[in-house]
Image (cartoon, rainbow over all chains, first blue to last red; front, side, top):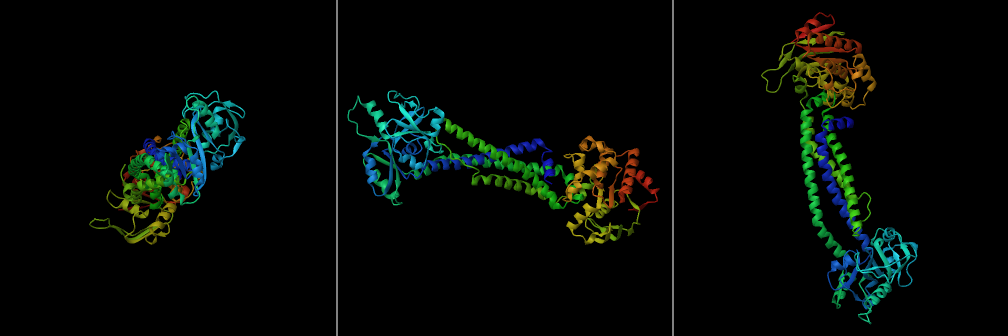
Length: 394
Length: 214
């Protein structure tokens, strides 16, 4: 029956190809939305790495979160190093990790921090060891791969977070370690000791100011208890020049902002699917009318009415199955394209994902649509007047 | 093999039913159903094929009392017992000749029997046409394919509705010969419904053909 349905399906190749294209486009759009939003969410969650609060200079919490957790935006400014001790002294704080930003290497950010930062993400070394003194650097896996730097190599950072800033050629970093690939934001960072950043910038600003107070850019905080979520941000925001950003809240806000675009794309996919469903319905109705003789002959040959109706439903299901495979493949391809685009722009990395749970919706949606479109044509096939058809004159 | 008693059928909206005189076909005989258009010939064929439900009387076909069969059992019985060569051949254009011959098995929910198809095509001198589509066949070839399809499941009763329609004299006689030969070879009873004088003339002369005039 399946083979027969397949042959009937392709007996009108142009109509079938058009319906297949419509269904595939709709399902690809839905797959893309489902997969991309799931992967973005997975990527965001992975980079949050248990960070409960980001503390930075007064400014936009979203900017602080984007700069401190995802390394996508410029930070709002610097805060005194003493803030870190203040935070660590808070009983509600389990851990506070400093980050000092400001320089970059070939577009990859150089972050001055402590080895605690690696522990936050649970990332291991693939080569070498963590820095033990200033001007030693540990490269993220992607940085090492694209730059080709090896242990013992030296490189100079550029001023600023984007490529093309003024160089710090007189103060090169030495590569002492390379991180194992983790899929997290650490893959595209150059990590070094906090003191390295101070050293580079003290020398840089030495001519202007002899006594620079030590500063960091951000502090990443992990709570000791859930109560901290209520108390600590208030306390931070009440401090002069400090601003807190709760990554969970900011990420949710970001997803809501991105969500508008997602909704439009999902709506577009659903409109495409509805058009495809309508087109399949018309095609099947036409097929039943055009093939009344064939179907009547099947009844005459002993096929029960339900088997003839099943043949029509099978045609629709085969089309839907093919469209689901193509739609899923196209959706995956689009997400892979987006992933490559984001990687080229050194932007947010999507979380790695196998076949996501939500994607099971795609073949189910396709099958549901096919059965809906086939219901009336199949009923007409079921109710076929075999006698009249077989007696019709040539 | 074939008999009816008090058989009548009334179409919805018709003034009166079509009544059929009682009949029983003697063993070993074939049947010619004669009658002008509207005489009830096609209705009787549809009743014999189990496509119309018997409303009144009794109808025994190939050992089965059709009034006692459920619609589902009737479908199964039709597929297993009857071979039909309809007036319109209804060969599927989407399928090759060989695939058209697989339809009876598919209709019954069984696997195809390519060996049987090859034997039948060879017997009808059509072996080389198995991969062709129906539109690539002549009228005569298409009729032979329809005959082969009817014989695929070794029917006990072979029904042919107006087998000479749109055929010239030579092809009419050839088609009748094919039907009679196939019935003899397969050991089935042949029922031909026709109002064509050429068919009537050809079959009336035969001892093994009974006639019912409607």
